Length: 224
Image (tube, rainbow, N blue to C red; front, side, top):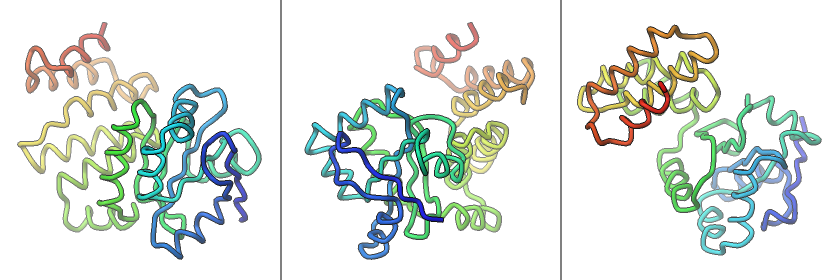
């Protein structure tokens, strides 16, 4: 399947198809970073503006990965979005030269936070299939939480909630209760959880959070 998805000139990068990006990844051993978005998505527009106008940000992204910007509603971009199960925008997918997903996340707010997210993803890059295999044989809280994040970005909220819970079971010192609450909240809206499940997830955050913490206020706002 030829995936000739071109970048727009306004993105502040050179035009490149996804196939060309995979070829370049094989030559340079850099991962490919796909930004899958739409024209109407405000966060997508914010990312495009940052790439086009912020030389430091653009250089930082280019140092870590080969950027390809894909419109999920046009041309072959529709197939790419379907292939990688993308329904929220922008979704960022870090993939190797074979197109295997190594990491993914949703949204863009600030360039500094995005750069940190990308740096961490590149340092801990591993095909998701390999991470699942390692988790099944040698489960760790770190892998459970990472897989939970990946399932969240794909919209599999029940899986994400279970994995966040498993991460806390594997390492009692880790607190993923807020992330689990977020997964249960989204799952409740989709009919995957009951209101009682949501209340229990909220109580779990209360049990571990400081009364002035952002997670506490987040739970109060969400439940309201």
